[in-house]
Image (cartoon, rainbow, N blue to C red; front, side, top):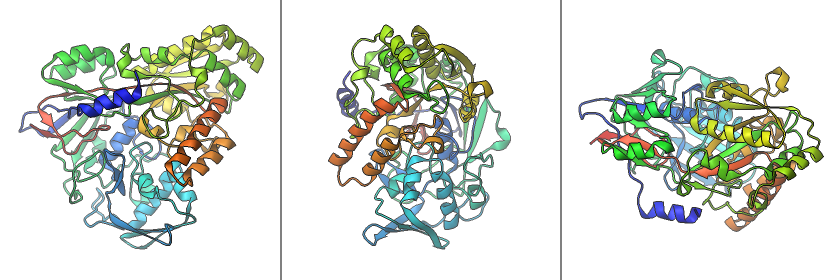
Length: 525
């Protein structure tokens, strides 16, 4: 299906606003997250489940609305001077941490510095910053080396890792060390004492949260007004069990409803199914560029001859209306997306040529450790396809079944497979995270300073910098075409296709905003 047709259909028929269940007098919302919340630190990981948790507990200086524009959130506004090289941000009144202390500008400055060490867009912002200062308790000043008009977009990004503001004492924690103390200024407090890892996470309304005045709630921007006193996340890895719990009314919201259970869920008049995020889920397989065999770009390129994106998507859903191929290195339907350079993804696959290409590239049967999170249904399905594909062309695949949390932990290991390292993993993002090279963390070519996989590409890094200073959208688009052509050569990862992810919610509650799961503005009907 053509992506443009798909988005046009979604625009013509407004997305159903999902509803959750509870009698009008009830104050608890029960939610089934996509996967267990293994890590709590929203700066430390790119996991969306941690980002979703982070938006409840922490707030951001700006917030992205449903039109992908940055709006003031913790700040009341900003001024720009000196030809775009001096930004002054003012915090709004009434901001308070969950421990009862006021939010200060120095807290935010420390948070920005910590987050920027883990985020591609934050790194770009700080690279353009000569000085970040806090002349008083409510003011942040960015003195820039060069104009950076994306400053609000960076500090209000909806993707992972999120630019969460936290108290200075927490923000001073090394960016590569997790924090577990959850003190934010967001609309919910995290109940650490009720956490059962692998089973349950609990949040309660922060009574002293002051929503910003004016406007409408829109994704992570606008007034965040909480109508439930308590939100309980219940981890249910088995899709059928999760769907039945929703149908029985034991749970209220099934975040990532399994596509093969859509018929069952849609038959229930008390359940509403919708697609809240039209940017879709873009999937990828990430190689470890530091260790054999995928430290050899020629071996990475050989897999293009065997990789069939449709096979990966059909492992998730057989419905061609729910997925899109070919997928390149930018989210389909976004301004930077094109099919330039994607010829290796088109046409029939040739396994014999792939085998020969591997041999010519110098592959000698090295063990390929594929990390497979068996508690993440879609990722396991695609990993199974990947394992079969690589075995079919003669690769020595070691299929390592693990859980999502352990996979996230292990993928930080830069060592060889004999020392607990890895070769490949499959993961996914929203199309918004692949919208441009500024925040596209998996497309960075900054080597060991980058995201797990540690791809090194001086050419992509140079083109990325060109994009950040490009004069207009036409120039940006041409640069992204060049980036995509280079990425097909360097192969920082293999795109596997894009699909639309439904959510399923009981019908007696309204107010769920489009985008990813947020928990303000939701109320019983």
